[in-house]
Length: 108
Image 1: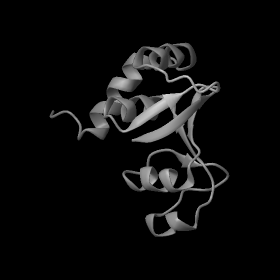
Image 2: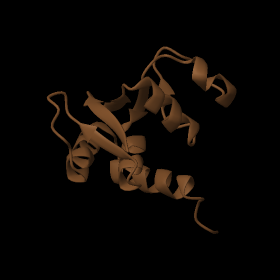
Image 3: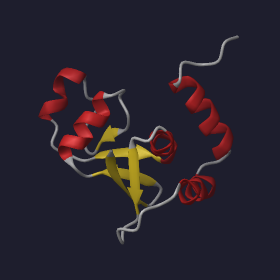
């Protein structure tokens, strides 16, 4: 299980090894102060990984990510959804679309 911290409207995975592994699982997030990193370059990155609220909720729903506030309190899914709704326009719709695309998309 990966561990992230809610900072403002983003979730940051501060453990460098965890950040590398999580990114390698599907290009989740963006390494802080880095351009788009290719898979063969991941082990050269030494910065935390920043996830959007949408990505963080998806990973939480998949059972891959625990999220904590700045005081170390574990957040629930409802806590994260509240943050998402207050910071992302049409959060529920955006999350639904993101989830569908990550899960392979809906058949047309």
